[in-house]
Image 1 (cartoon, one colour):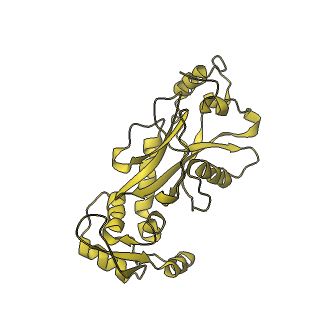
Image 2: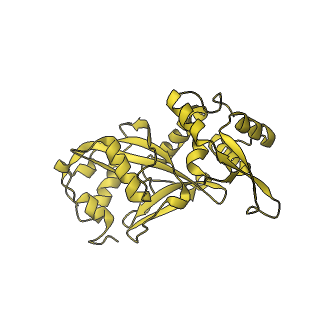
Image 3: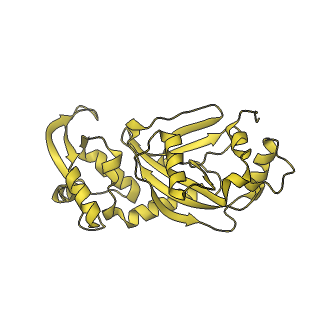
Amino acid sequence: MSTDNSYNKKVLSIDASQMLPGVSIDCVIFGFHEGVLKILLNKFDTHNQWMLPGGFVGIREDVDAAAYRILKERTGLHKTNLIQFHLFGDCNRTNIEENRRMLAENNFEGDSAHWFAQRFVSAGYYAFVDFSKVKIKDKPEDRTHWHMLNEIPDLYSDHNKIIKKAIDVIRLHLGYIPIGFHLLPDKFTMSELRVIYETILGETLDRRNFQRKMLASELVVPLDEVSKKWGVKSAALFTFNKERYEKLLKSGSPLLGSSKI
């Protein structure tokens, strides 16, 4: 049941002249928590499906600026690096009938010319964020929750395809993307880093070979410390060589020497 203060109603009430017509943004936001890679999703009170955090572009707003605004609204973060990875423009990607139903539920029925009843192309962005630094504002009318990557439900529109495309692009450029650098805290175990790569790749990696490659890259530095948070057996702790990361990123060189792990 819709309410006068629903998030959807506020958004749908925006004058079309204030927005870039036919353009939306969808963000695939990755976080790592308790040994699991997760994606941030949200759901409005007037809709029964979860969706990617997204929004629209102001008529006088840069597209990248709109993406960072959406990221900050959903996570409280504003310094995280967002990567635009694809433009989703299939002519049938927007479910017009579904959008019209949402308009009717928010008392906009009969407005066939409403901007939300039109076709949209969407700019897809992805970001790796530090789970511990994310500040979620979860409201009854606008819920925001983390979902495990391997348990994503059937999402609104083509959002499942957007997630799959993001992962495909990340896999393609895996050797050039500092994945763990943004997802993990300053001190971490090699198992935590390996789980992130295994989840993205969808395959099990050899533990010894993975550690050998990471140490050979000089991006991961062993610490004289151990952690017992994963059980009774101690696990060695590591940290990232931030100076080397930044140097390789600026030069455009592959972080791991190749695109394969």
